[in-house]
Every structure is written in C-alpha cells, then in structure tokens.
Image (cartoon, rainbow, N blue to C red):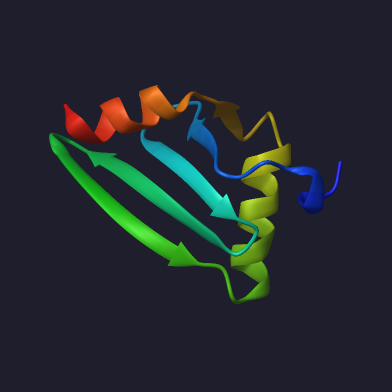
Length: 79
C-alpha cells in the first residue's frame, strides 16, 4: 500500500505508551510525549530523509507503533 492510498490522518502510539502520534500527511505529524506527569505536544514537518522515514515507519511498521483511534489520541492529551 502506497502513501497515496492512506486516508490521513492516522493515529499510532509506541508500544511503551510514552508517545502518541497523529500522522496528518506523509510530511507532517503531531506527537504527544508523556514525560512523567507532563504532556508535550509537538508538530513536526518531515522535510529531511530521517523524518520522512520515521513517518513511513509509524504508518507501516507494526513492530514500532500500534494503531489507535482518534478518540484515544485526543483523550491522551485532554486528560
């Protein structure tokens, strides 16, 4: 499946539950990092190859990140 076939946004989280992702497009994503009791939300523009590869891995690598729902992503930030 190519990026063109993906219906963005898609939502993922690391298996350890420390980072949640909203992949907006092949070149842009949001990340919520959980550090202790703090939540940090960043918008990342994937303009360099390592960042682009990270987006690809988040979308396709099931060993790296688990698929989650929009509601789970939003609840993570709002609680």
